[in-house]
Image (cartoon, rainbow, N blue to C red; front, side, top):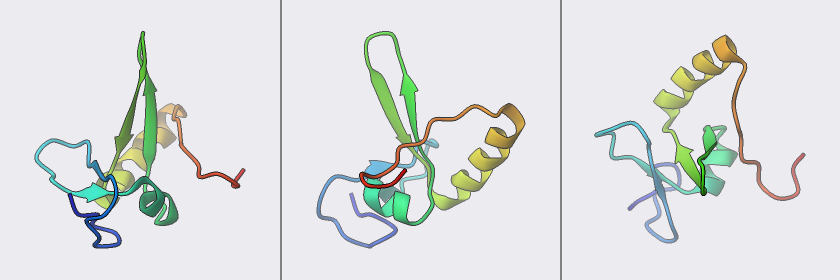
Length: 78
């Protein structure tokens, strides 16, 4: 799947979590572009969800309303 941020098909790309969106992105590209990456804990493991820029804006609204979110940050950043 091609990363819609850097336009490369190399590496592993997450698909936007919203159904039928079909946009992929590398986690590092998404973090650099300010796109939300969410980690959802489950009973036995976790799930990483990525959002395209449009859905990132919607997620920001939801985060402001609930105050609850998880964000993955790249190494070296605090």
